[in-house]
Image (cartoon, rainbow over all chains, first blue to last red; front, side):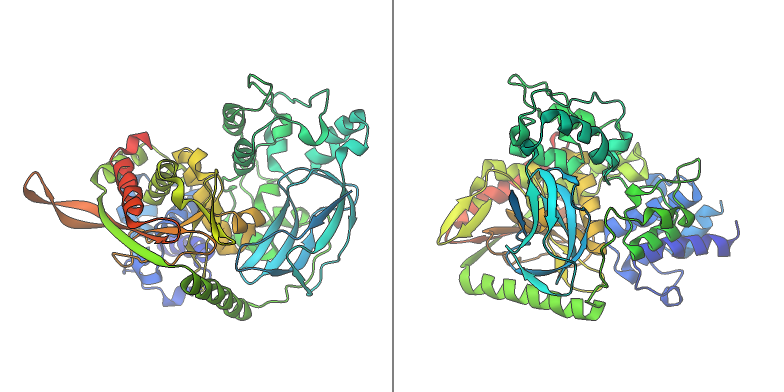
Length: 78
Length: 446
């Protein structure tokens, strides 16, 4: 998987949670929840979606990697 | 013959448009089954039928005409019009084919179609347990009752819900499939995946979009109009609240250190889908506190407080496109923490996609709003009439607190209570908030 592919998955999942958000508007290195006003339920559903699509387990202690789009992408590429 | 009328959809909702029938004449309807969809100011609402019987006639076609609550929309024929033997046969066939995914997966459970068949009275089950079964998607007609008097017990329902894939659980699907399903109004739970790993892909969807009855109508309301209509519904409800209800307000800071460390530890071993959010514990504490201080649970109707035996927690859910809805978690005090989390996740998802059920819109006995880990510190709620109280939780945040004469940093939340002074006084309100506080100090017991 390349970074672009990882980000495509990440945005694809995000589009289910915040369908009104256009990917162009999202800053990749800024806290995602704050930027898009995601609540804890949205955020959890985002993690669940990414995990379902990629098959990557995301233990709670690693959730801090998923604060930003960049952070999430680099975690998936590890 | 039973006349099925458009049920109440909440105090601020008195009309709706029939969008689709999900049953056809001749079908058997079970209690709690979704039989139609209506469009309201608050989105699509699935209409449940609490009668049992055969569908005799659908009185109205889907159309953009606004119908008042109470309008007869279908005729049902009660089951005891037919011989018991026929019912058993029909039971094995027709109902099991219906859209209930529990049926298909429930192969381990004994099929207990009772021989005597007490028609509408069977099977024996108390209303709270029936609600629980409904909430967990358990088909009570297939349970083997273990109660002393042959009734279905809570454990019967629970044990039936555990081994199978819970209907509230999100089916596994690709994001694309999920989106397409949402757009086309397809229930993913009813989709059979073609892939061996059970993941639903887009190609699986078209065949699954066939509903039992395909009488659907173009949605007459667009998003912008719906936003305005919802604003109007909120305005009517809040105007009535501020006009009629003498509100009083209380607040207290609750130390969540114990709760947060319990959650962290509990979530450490859990997979993502089983993870617990703070909101589930807050809701559970409110539900249990209401058992101790029940005078905040019920409705003010015709000049008097009508307490409710059941605790249906309305949960304020803000919609991403603006507006909010407050559907109910039915019988919230009877759900354990995991069930509460499942119910909450499911309710929020359906509230946001506009697929709530009629009972959820009308049954709340108190409402809770929780701002989670973002937003402001304190919320001063306005009561949703005809309820008599609302509990608010502000942002969960770290703040200095005094413990054993030293200042330390703890995670805390400001809990607030707004209540109807016609029903209770501040002293009772204080006891209610303190009960919530006390319960949250022992999260392992929640």
